[in-house]
Amino acid sequence: MQSMLMIDTLLVSPLGEIPLAAMGIATTIVAFILGIQMALANGTQLVLSRAVGSGVNSSLSKAFWAGMSINFVVASLFWLLLTVFEYPLIEMLTDEPSLHAEISRYLLVSKYLVLFTAITQVIIALFNGMGKTKIPFKGYLIELPINAVLSYVLIHGISNFEGLGVQGAAWGSLIAILIRCVYLSLCLNVDASLRLKFTATRNDFVANIRHHFIEIFPVAANVTMLSIGATIYQLLYSQLNINAYVAITLVMPWIRAGTQFITAWAHSSAITISQAIGSRKLDDLTKNVDTSIDIAVWISIASALFFAALSVVIAKVYPDLDASTYHALAIIAPLYIFLPIVRGYNTVHGHVLRALGKTTEVFKVNFTGQWIISIPLCALIILVFDGSIFWAFAIQPFEEVVKALPFRRLARKSLKEFDSQKAEKLMYN
Image (tube, rainbow, N blue to C red; front, side):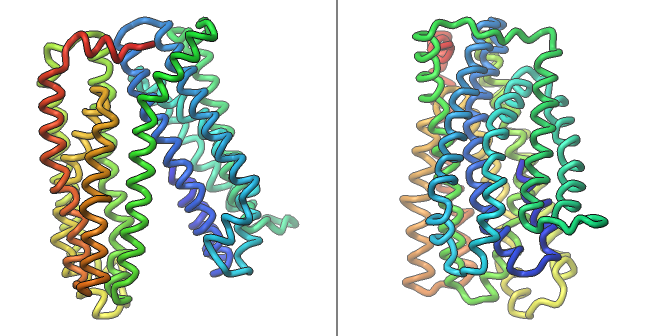
């Protein structure tokens, strides 16, 4: 989902600094919205997985249309905000007049991405909840090459067509995701096992949407909070010396990419646990959770080994940097090698707890660990004590350590208390 923005940025880079800077700001806005949409769809995915486990088709249908309604309404609100407040938002993000027009041209087209993404993410959540994960995977395989080819032609032009520059990237992404949306919709229609006919009365549907929203809203709020927190960290790191800041900037994309495998496993675990709850197969629930956590830890260790290998070759990956930057990278290497181990442990616990209906409790742990303890401590180290890059960056693994024990205690307590009555309460649809 995020790769289309990466493709756009890569293809726009030859146009120069102004278009690239405009692209960076515009894609930050779009990526933020897409992240919230994905979080909402992930919450819906848990509800859909329970419905699949129950085997009750009407529950699956109601969960699907409730999730689609919520995600599309939220997408429409973001579209409206981008339409009405586009210029104030751009002026707030940058005071460089030369960037305003380019950002506006990109957002004029890319704001429609959020509408089609709302549809595709809920359909993907449905297929994932059913265990038919190859269908959405093929959708991405269709979209990405179309996006790359179309964006290249529309950005740089071909033959007598001069190209649209930054706006061409937006058109390429929009057309590609529209094609993926059509593909996924066709897959819905040809799947004989799916009967998604809307049969609920208006009052029942409104009540179902309300319950659905209450469950998935904390998931979106959690993702939004963590995303803003990550931005605050970056702003604080920018107060370090330039070499330290560059070192952190270089490793952060690798950290995000390397932890995706852990997040993917955590999502998968949440789906299978939700299916078990829906089918009322609770006897092996604790065993399944323990297995999920064990495998997540092993994946985390593999990620740590990857980062350890990266620390050895990072000078070859980024040649010709200042010696002080290489020194800063060496200082924080033990920290970013250790980070995925404890973060992976927390990630799988968070998703397991969401599957058990504890989305609000997960939000509280993350909010306390990040906003009450870690971010203020990081600000204190950097802004008051003028601390080194080691202690400043150490706050990120420290945050995960702080959250680990509460997550474990909450998971064990929730599993111990979880019974058929609590499972029935989750099956509100």
